[in-house]
Image 1 (spheres, rainbow, N blue to C red):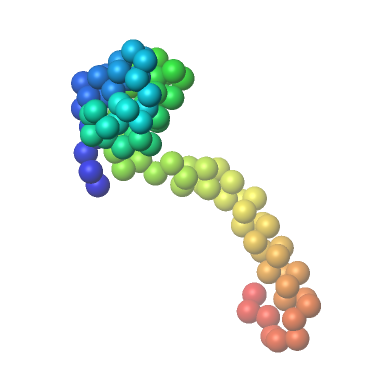
Image 2 (cartoon, one colour):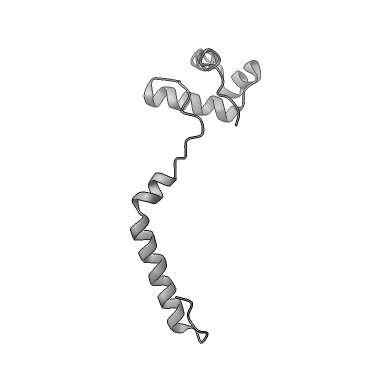
Length: 92
């Protein structure tokens, strides 16, 4: 996994955009991706900070764990429903 770009570079890109440069012109000047510049700008507007997040963070497993019982129940009910219509022996 790559390293986060420096906060100094982020500040310069955001300052250029705030100074009137378009995101596309700023990325050409500083050599970063357009997606990064747009994301940094949105983060700055939303939070007031432009610090990089923690690297390698899994953002989905916590959501899945919180709903695991509901997801398991739905999958089990679907399997039971499908097994009752099937002529093949059930694997449940």
